[in-house]
Amino acid sequence: MADYGRLQDRERGVAVHTHNSAFEGYGLRDLSGHRKKVNTVAWSCDGRRLASGSGDRMIRVWSVEPYCPVAKTERADAEYGSHSDAISSLQWRPDHPDVLASCSNSKNDTNIRFHDARTNKQTAAVQLGNEKNLVLSWSLDGLSVVVTCSNDEIAFVDTRKMRRSRQWGLSGHTKLSEVRWGPSQSFLTMALDDGTVRIAPLARLDSPVWRLNSHASHTTCLAYSRDYKFLASGGSDALVSLWDMDEVICLRTYSRPDQSVRTLSFSHDNSWLAYCSEDGYGTIDVVSTQTGDVASTLYLKSYCETIAWCPTAPVLAFAGDEKEGYGAISIWAPPKPTSS
Image (cartoon, rainbow, N blue to C red; front, side, top):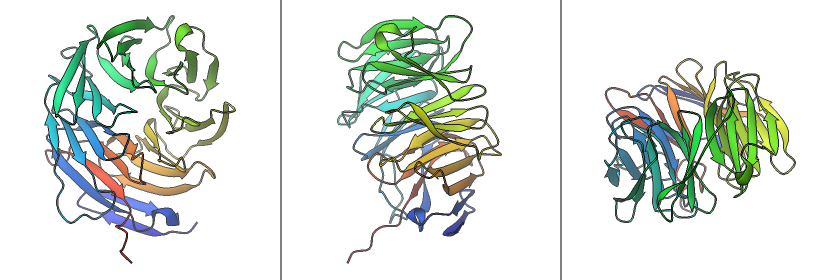
């Protein structure tokens, strides 16, 4: 296997081994500002903004240059302090680059909060109940949000009326890890602790159309490609499964990590899948969706909580444990194009 470069960044504690020319010359930089661990990052649909949510109860919004290095230190464009506890999940509306939804994994803050990046203000807060809100996902048309709750129920928020529209819970002893909207507007995809991924119509969530046997144990996380043609799932069995949603068949599995898979994300063109395992402090693998080859590996010196590819450029954001008293977001990006 060709080695196109090894980057050892001692300040950030990251070693990067690259085996594919697509990532030759990539560099790393940090976005600093959070005072505690960053739990979640997400890009706006146009790729112009990156949002981050932290244990310091703050949401920060950044304008990120799509290359490394940059000429000057980047600072957050805005800070939202509306949550009263640590932020567990945030997502931009898929059809609107200015609208952001977020939630907290705490019984002290059970509101789903909405912000508008044009005014940098909270526009609504929807109270769901007394359970922790773990993960949220927008509908494809941006008119609803589904929230995975700690009691293995899911709640639906109507974003036009800004109120809870529906609640649904699993029967039996099966536990929910997370729920994602897709592969179309009328379906939900659920990751379960029995190793399956269930895809069910909204009208009949108790009657899944597909039960994908993805893992030998707990399915921990899900990700759809931007066009919903691919689904990836991670498990506590240290496997990543890649599914073709046109044929609903498993294309391949990736088995490089030695520990549970924590989070995963597709690149903007579906060419690459990045996933993070709990191997050591944390390892991010970037693999080809076409060949299955490992293109690059990032060996971290701190635990990785969240990763997200930019939807318009080959730029990866990731974050996790606080370092030296602050929570940093790392940007892995190509060199700036040279002018001809």
